[in-house]
Amino acid sequence: MHPILIRNNVKILGEGSQVIVFAHGFGCGQSSWKYITNAFLEDYRVVLFDYVGSGNSDINQYDYHKYSTLEGYACDVIDIIDALGLKEIIFVGHSVSSMIGMIAALQRPDAFKQLVFIGPSPKYLNDRDYIGGFEAKDIETIFTNIAEDYVGWARAISPVVMDKAEKPELSDFLLECFEATNLSIALAFAMATFKADYRKQLKDLEIPSLTLQSSNDIMAPQTAGEYIHHNTPNNFLVVMKATGHFPHISEPEETIREIKDFIGNKKLSQSEDQLFV
Image (tube, rainbow, N blue to C red; front, side, top):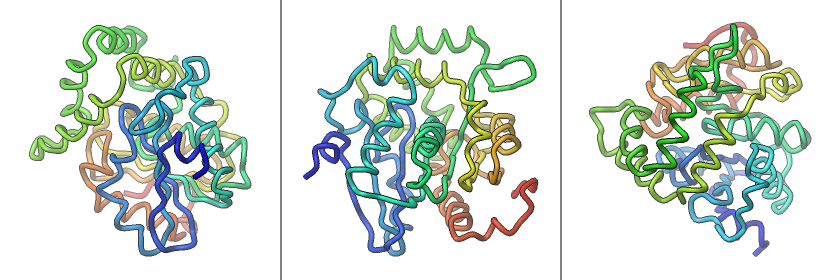
């Protein structure tokens, strides 16, 4: 097996010819997709992986300098694409992986056919007229809480970002994902995520993309999704009925339906400025 596939714990499933790559968000691994992947196995070739330092990747290959920015994580994506010889993939990224996927697509546009952003944000920090949802003091508090008591922070934040009180088992699942992540790596990933600003790069992404915006998402407010929609060519915005930051876990059926509608080109004939609800 190719060393990159071992390093990133790459799994290939499904029977289709069209490749769809699922990229997890902060504090998670490929297991976070388990609620939706079965719906794609019959018609797609599904590629799952863990970023170095996450999930069951080879943590010995983690490099704090490389992964101090999202470009380092985009390298993981490109490495996997090259190792598998992929072209014209559909890339589905959750949270920070949305911008990671955009970075990779700008570097290797030939390898991407469509992108799906779930709960994306080009910048988490509020900046004059831009509302990312966080003030500088909020982000510093997150860093401090992770550094001083990562498990306590994860336990407190999991039910809030899941926003599915009637199904506490989903918050418990998310907490298990968080707890499996090394503390120092989690802090470094959080810093790379919350300090990032990729607003200027959005205009260069010409590959068709979909923004799936949850309602009541405290990590990526609707203003961030709308900013991406209005500043990215060929981007379509769906405001979902799902709430919270993890719709692929809390509302898998709705998430599956919206992804399939987009990659099946059902939305491409609509107006670029239309919001789909």
